[in-house]
Image (cartoon, rainbow, N blue to C red; front, side, top):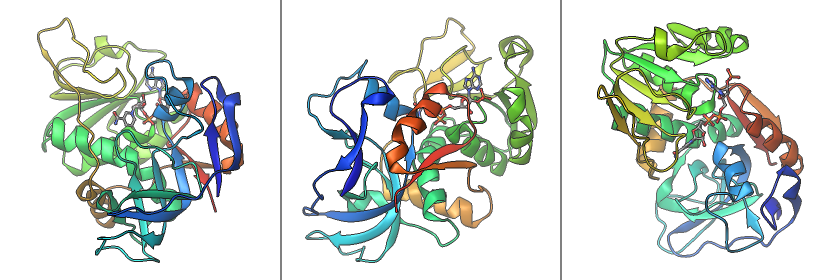
Length: 299
Ligand SMILES: NC(=O)c1ccc[n+]([C@@H]2O[C@H](COP(=O)([O-])OP(=O)(O)OC[C@H]3O[C@@H](n4cnc5c(N)ncnc54)[C@H](OP(=O)(O)O)[C@@H]3O)[C@@H](O)[C@H]2O)c1
């Protein structure tokens, strides 16, 4: 199969496109013929290898995908060859920048016809993370106000729509060029973080969701996903800092499908690349200034 992989850590230029062995489904697994796979911030962090260097190469990057089941391992009863599925690799597993992946059947879900494979791949890890943060960790309720930092990113774009669906008022931060987009997906108040220090102007939030990893939220329950594996320790007594636990299971993926079916969450804005263009996609992802998601159209 064709794949985008690395043979050593380094800058975007270490990404190679070429042939890798086809995966096989072991017991409890399915092989998915990947149609689309998305780029996540974690991918270039893994590629760089600064915090957790890999011990084995070549390594196929990529954590989420959408595609069609092409083989079923022993013991798998609830998925069949031909099923359209999407999913997020298990913690510690990667390999979605490829034409095929073997993955536990229990952590993929059937894709809805309302989403293309490109849309489903874009929503998988972003949606899973947003649901774990907004519903499971922050437990956002109707009538509350939440600050979502980094509104135009994939996770935050989903989180804004979910918080609005739950009945919250949403304040978000973004550069000026993304304000129209954020208004369209439902943000009530948008702060241009280049012009205004949000820590000085945002008051009386019940909750905050930081997807940027910068300044500390202005009080309340605060969830952090871009500050490492632990929540930072804010030097303010009015902030309860939380690190969402983003596990893998079918249930959370089915929640994404249900939110889409209800019209609560719409597909994200997407820029598509070929797998052979992984270097270019990583350069954009690393710049951290784009809207929505970057997605590989694999086939
Ligand atoms: N399981 C997990 O823990 C998990 C899962 C998924 C993602 N993450 C992490 O969560 C973070 C967000 O990921 P993502 O994929 O949603 O987005 P991303 O690709 O990391 O960020 C892109 C967005 O960030 C915005 N941005 C950059 N600097 C900003 C700032 N100072 N203030 C406000 N917005 C800013 C940009 O918008 P502007 O152009 O408007 O600046 C852009 O839309 C990443 O660090 C990622 O690694 C963690």
